[in-house]
Amino acid sequence: MKTVNVQLTVPEGMTPFLDDSERDHSFERNAMMLYPFIQNQTISHGRAAEILGVHKFDLIDFYASLGMPYLHQSVAELEEELADIRRFERMNP
Image 1 (tube, rainbow, N blue to C red):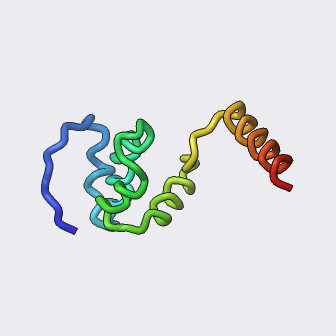
Image 2: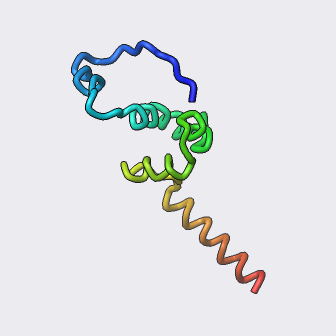
């Protein structure tokens, strides 16, 4: 994966967390920077995984481990889908 250096302006209090030579946190940091773009549907999980150089399901698992859902559905939307499935099952026994 090709990388570039980018200068970021962050609050001073973040400095100790960005200068961690004991462990490379670049995957976690970069995945978190991409998440808002996934959430607002600018990019897909698959595209974000390509950018990060990982498999899509590994990225989904990472987000899930932090409590970030793969699907963003309301209860009402889920109930509507279940009703559609039940209607389909009755029509096609």
